[in-house]
Length: 142
Length: 130
Image 1: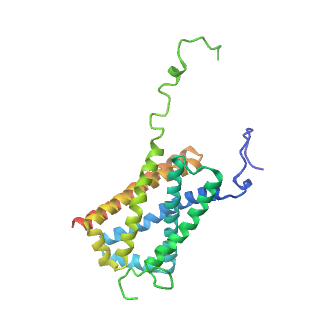
Image 2: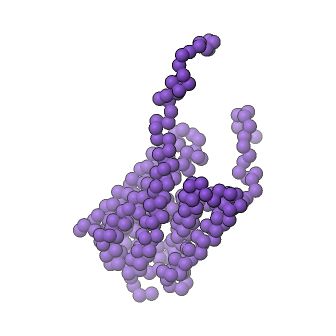
Image 3: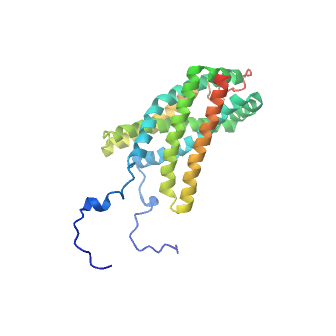
């Protein structure tokens, strides 16, 4: 038994609800927001290492260039793309447009698909696609 | 409690001064204003950053040393840290019910963002002004 003693009615637990796009979109927005919170630490570490010198820069570049670093970096790219696109959607909805449930569901799905496409496009155009031409932050020939 | 006495005070007079301390919408507006700034700053920052990191340490140094890039980096990181501090504040307020834990996490959130900004500002200024 739980120790809950409050007699007042409770709203149903999150597991009770059927998943729908606008709900997934809202949750993803929060998750990617927290993801970006962590990701910016990487950007600032890179900046700081640039200011300190090669002794810190090169090991960090090696870490980011490793397979795990690349996975984290791609996840961060995805996270930024989604949060940015869905953020634009939020700004439009804050202005009072696009709130019709059907249309909101459509733009929610659109933001998810476009974010994935954008992240892949960024890595492709930048020549960062894993296995093709991994990011080479050390400056050495690959 | 005794029976309430008839009063000449208006409903407004009873609540005046007990309200939102006058920044009810401040958080909401700041979150959106920084969001609008980031819509422009993040793509610019990402494109130039990706270009720079590909030529290694020297490329990174040259990138940060450029005056326009230095200002762009500080604006992008400044707006991002402000935005994420506001966002994390909402996340903590939503999920942490215990007063003490909530207060500690909210203070920690502010400290983390300020420390990150100090580190970024130091790095950019050192490279760009040296």
